[in-house]
Length: 253
Image 1 (cartoon, helix red, strand yellow):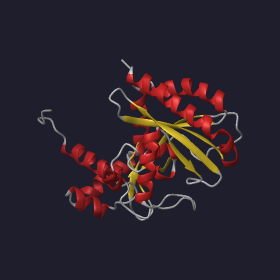
Image 2 (tube, one colour):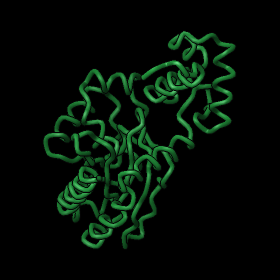
Image 3 (tube, one colour):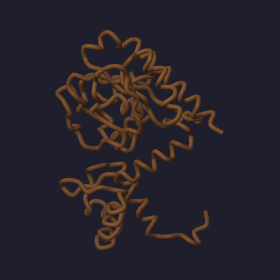
């Protein structure tokens, strides 16, 4: 593409967003300046503007994460493929079979951004709602998308070990997570048992586009005492739902 009308400020913003997406909640202004080569004075103004626009958020410790505006833009991107519309239609069938809550989410760096949910007949109240983020390694919906990566790529996405534990069951070592992801990819779905929150279990499967690229994932969430009775049928149904959504995404004209 010709750079005759190139806007350097937008290029710098894009560079910064990529660094933050690769290491959310880990980089401060000085870190971003070192990585990007942008001087601190210019970077301060750029980060401040991006924060006001909601592209990024400044967190405790002065580190940065992607902001809600990008989540909205991401959701709009997926609407091009009717994925949200397809999710609400197709998930209804799955909820009728299993009776549990289903969520749709995408992977952004080392986090899951939840896009939508379909509530079942279970009284369970989900802790995550559309627009919220959660560590990918501590959720089935995140693991279902992390399993696309090589170990080296995984280390780049999750560079700090041990991984912060959400519960006593959270996987905190990259090697253990990597072994789990290999098994998940082989069977076509990922599971999470009380790793994100005590008393909750999930099973998730990835949604692929026409090029077999991972674009999102769907998951069932249920209480631990329900999990033992429903886990086998839930595994089958979440894979079937993901396949239906993959087919619809792949056939979008």
